[in-house]
Amino acid sequence: MLLAVPKYGGGMADTLSWPKKSRELCNHHFDSTIWNDLKIRDDDIIISTYGKSGTTWTQQMIAQMIFGGDPDLSVAEMSPWVDLRVPPKAVKLPEIEAQKHRRFMKTHLPVDALKFSPQAKYIYIGRDGRDVVWSLYNHHSNANNVWYDALNNTPGRIGPPIDPPPEDIREYWHDWMDKDGYPFWSFWDNVRSWWNIRNLPNVMFLHFSDMKKDMPQAMRRIADFLSIEINESRWDRIVEYCSFEWMKENAMKSVPLGGAFWDAGAKVFINKGINGRWKDVLTDDENAAYENKMIEELGEDAALWLKHGGLITA
Image 1 (cartoon, rainbow, N blue to C red):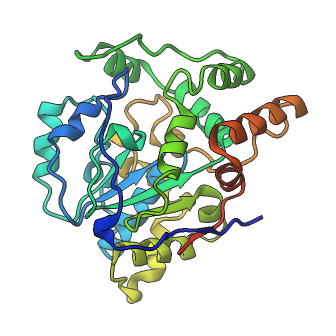
Image 2: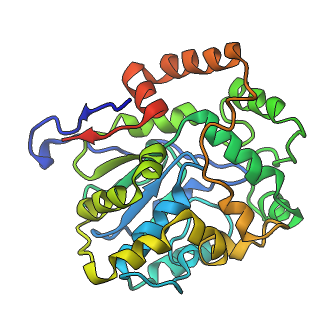
């Protein structure tokens, strides 16, 4: 099922209501204050997700299209997670400022916790929350002591530490549902905040399922939105370097710190990229509870898009 949602509401850009930062989010992962001192350039690209929704994949697509298909790009180093509090702001901001290429950065913040620029371009990727949790569990359960030490013991953490997950993924699911994103951050708040600005001309929505269904088409849409001129002679290579298979085989180039936070290495971070692994685990009642909550929190149009994907069109 596809959902076509009108994108532009009409009117000139100078009459639009642009998002304003209104709060800070700080925890074991986040330091949203980093955005306050970031000097945003007019051609900056911001890739946003709740997490485990195709962030690394989209970073790879953008990098390969900007640089014309280069298998040796260290995308994780080129595309920083701005609001991650490790390394601290004093280290991270000069590194971002020193970048000479067109910058493409990632965030997992809701809109009102970051600094928004009318000139920069924003890509938001959504994914069904059930698929997000199954991917999160793989990410969390494979993390090693280096990961926990960095997040919990680097000075500046606000709030409780993050602990190892339970062995039962259903318990993990219920914790995430009952406490809205626990032990990470609010899922509904993230999706809702971005959905509310989907009509802005510098915001593009993608869905993980549509990217899986036709990756080259998704890449063409991204390139058009970002005004990236594709090197057509390299297109086949560009697409190859963005495939899940290639990225998993070469995961050290796209995974933070080359996978040092996971004992199984960078490949476990890329994992499977498969939707629907929850179907044989969650009961009918549990699925109904999730879908009812999704509508309650997001409204029917956003819930339908989050579940199925589809174009948000002009």
